[in-house]
Amino acid sequence: MIKIGITGSIGMGKTTISKMLSCINVPVFDSDLVVGKILNSNGSVISKLNTIWPGVLIKKKNTIDKKKLRKIVFSNEKDRKKLEKILHPLVEKDKLKFIKKHEKRKILAFDVPLLYETGQQKKYDYIFLASCKFSTQISRVLKRRGMTNEIFKKINKSQMNTEEKIKMKPIVINTDRLKIFTFFDVMINILYIKKKGYK
Image (cartoon, rainbow, N blue to C red):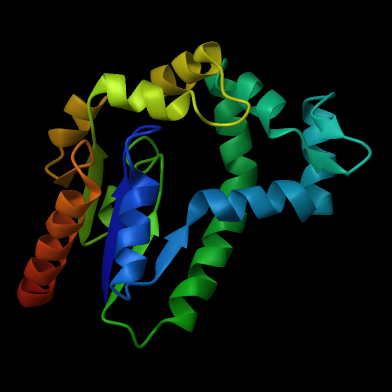
């Protein structure tokens, strides 16, 4: 089984690449989606987070206010690492279930936003790095619900810049073009990977 990691800074186009891989029948594990489910429905985690950071709980729904939590953890590296320590084992547990479910597949992909920042690059045979111009990135991000320029700056600052990630020699996928060209890029690289196999 070949494992592809999909990463890139916020707004760079990871989700677009993930959807394209799904379209060509490559199963994709979405780390953000799993985290969202945990913050919405895992009672133990919700209680723990509200104890550590009072005020992040939406009492009527008994879920975590992601906007408030995001603002806290991306303002302080210690808080971000504390949150990662709580969530990471649960995400990994879901990831193992995903791998088990698709154990007969030749290629699996994993959307991991902080792949390089958390030192996970060795877990994958290939890495697709989503990349685009800063103007495109900020335009995309500020269209998101609950996103502000202040939050964007904090998130972006907490992530390794694209130039540093490129030095790690990933497969760079440009998402700045028409989607059809990005799709061709994804397709060509998948064909290359199928032909070459493991590194």
